[in-house]
Length: 547
Image (tube, rainbow, N blue to C red; front, side, top):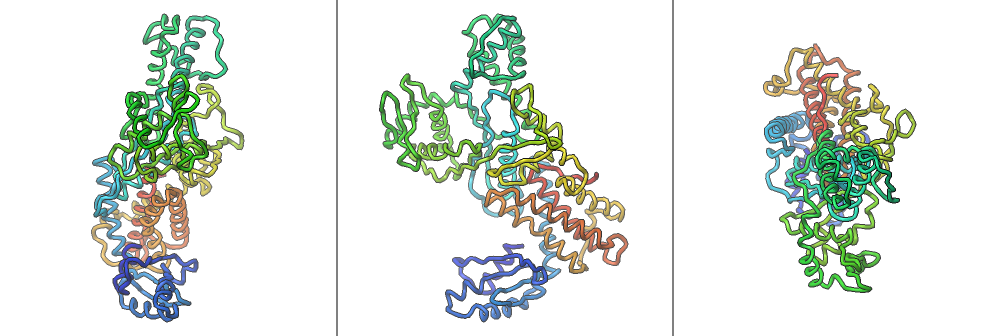
């Protein structure tokens, strides 16, 4: 709808492509569906009074069937769309929605290929990438849900997106996992008194892993420290499998997994590449990357005095692997504690000979969780963490996804899980689902199917309130585009809450069934339902048709 109106203005007014046409929604709905300040932009070019240009624009557009009314007011041009045009747009949305449903069922993708005419850029999207040393906690979940929703929305808009999980399976954290399992086995299986180091992995899951290792290797595996690396590898694989299962609980899967360990055979080649671009130097027996030359606050060590690569080294190899692949854009979703890490990784990309500006890093803040106004209980199984699995079992995948997407990921999020169990307007996912179920109930009571309305309805006969509701339901596409462009998925959440509030108000104020224009109103409500269903699906949520 927005693209159509912009294209019409450009064509009818003979406007050059270099001039941006802005369409705004007036705060006063009586002024129309859209307002454009276009006359002010043209006035600067033509050195003319914007009020005169606005009147000329209004006169030029007055006879177009897309508009019921065009009004020039103080230099702005207010546009009221015609019912005929809104029905035309509704028909197109309905066709796209049906194609989207069919594509989603047949290919399990979220790309509306029927309205995308030109392929868009290929994007490699990496997210979660939690160390395979323990179960997923609630902090990991926020970035996981955000990344998955971003991929769904991007694919719907025609972007070719590959989702990737980077497995940090090399280095000290994996060694510590093996040692933690080894000590847990000695204590709980061999019943030997052990002394734990100050830093080790705690929680019942480590004891569970030790028991699984005993079944797999035999109890003798805990008698010699030579087995620690085998225990680490086994434990890592078991935890990674659990992580995949936890993610599947909320509908998240990945196109590929990349092992840090598997990349280290390229380390010398990576060092040679960095050296060829004057990106590294040796000092005090260490190898440093000259990241301060590329916006980092200081240079960083990438190889220690003993020849062991640092944590940063793994990320350098990984990003060389990423940029070697044929993508136009790269997105990483990291925890907010990695903010200072961005500059050094971008510096590495630069010294590897790639364009560091192709990497976009989005940050995800931690979550504060309450239950009945009190801090949510930590999991004994994982030590001092709240497990994602526990919260999903408590409130369900849909509520978790919606609340995590309802705010920008780089802002603090606090919520009480008990609020998401309420069956009233305070629970947004209930409120939205209730609207959709209400529409389905109306169709059931009418004896008319959505299929019949979609394929046989011809002429809309609606009042201004129904027209306003239809217009709002047809704004979803613009919201989707804006949410992806700005990486602000909460815009879809806000839109859905607003649309459902408008629907509930309309439902309470108007007689729908057995009214003279029953079919027209049911047609409008069908479009509302489709927008709810599509919006939720892009968030990874299946809309309910019954409550």
